[in-house]
Length: 594
View 1 (tube, helix red, strand yellow):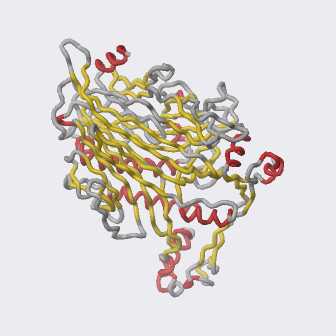
View 2 (cartoon, rainbow, N blue to C red):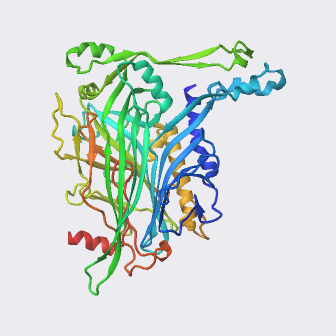
View 3 (cartoon, one colour):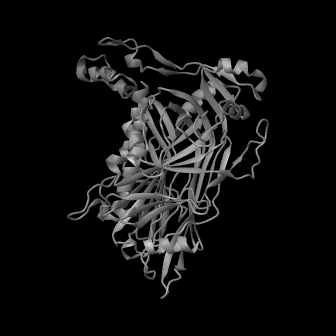
């Protein structure tokens, strides 16, 4: 049954693939045109992603109409074109749909009723399609697309997608602050489902109540650029126990990442805890400026920058399994006194099927889903419980994907993550750097909301961030939450394909001799690690804007990369990892000047 529910949710997500990926017939989309300098809209992709409902237009302030209000795939989408640098940002706001009674039945029962036709019990066929449970949910899917001209004057763009969280504790590795292979690892699935929160609230009453999830997108044109982003509140996280050997050489190599063993998949095996982050907030500041490279003769280029600001909210609720004995043993340590409960949820069977027998299946009047006993740690006790597990670090996993009309074969990665002044990940071909990720001034963070015993953490103290590059192949081959990643990458693929059709058709409709793939041409995962987390708020506010250059000619028009000379973004952080694209000559001179 759990598998059926998850599959049903996945199918709703994958509606995007069935509609959103159809080739565009015109540049117009959601009452806007991609030849504009900018636009930002909240749109509902259901039932027709190619012609979405415009829920809200940030430019005009006009609110639209949701044509199917109880079934939604609502996204925030913003597009900016400044000095020829095209930037598109998409974030899921909410997903609403009905789970039908058919979705909860074993496949053979539903198939049998369909096969029986008139011989089935009266009303049985109609009962299968009864709307049973309404799901109002969200997940922090976000994608940033950057479209530009490469140094070899071909269209290309980079996509950046959030993948998952990983918590780590109790390590026996070489460094207690790092996510080593000896650590206890817990993969986090980040989402919010209002109906799940309601069921938990029933079990927790009157001790605690999870507030409803919410979201707020923002977009503003400034004097020298744009600011945009989204803030999610009350985000649920399921933690799955996994066994993975993670740390390896800091370069992309299959031999550098070994995954000999995993535990379970997303369907529920080894889910050992759940928590609620009170917010996930992301803000991006996009600017373009003209820079003199300091060469003789003088060469000026346009430089694109993005400054990243975000917060990872604190945890005020932690739910674990089989912890009643632990609560008793540490009775003197608790602040708000943890409690245990056995959550359950009852679903009524449609009347037409109650008491009916189909094959070997007799339908009851209702079905009650009962979970095992759970321990609930609220407010500060959630953080105390996490500290008793030898403390936690939090790792953010992001996927960066490069696309180009020219195949890039056998790239070489070079990392400079141990350089305190300018940690970077470089991608080189034949000795030339053709893009890189910079973490300058992003190698520390602040931990807040932990000003009680036993912590008393100074909220102004900088703490080190650790960054590691990984080959993603082992994660998928080893089936670590493979269905979860399939959904994530399906969304990423859909938006990649859509944006390529709009601004870079050469990517998806290449000419003779060019590749036809639009996914995983060059993909890598970046792990950003925040040690000593304990469930407090992570405040990571970089003080700089990253810089990149493309062709060494003057600025031309804002009509798109085909006539542009610049690109570049840097978003190393919770949801997105940056890719900076530059001419090798500028990259070398930039590093040398510093």
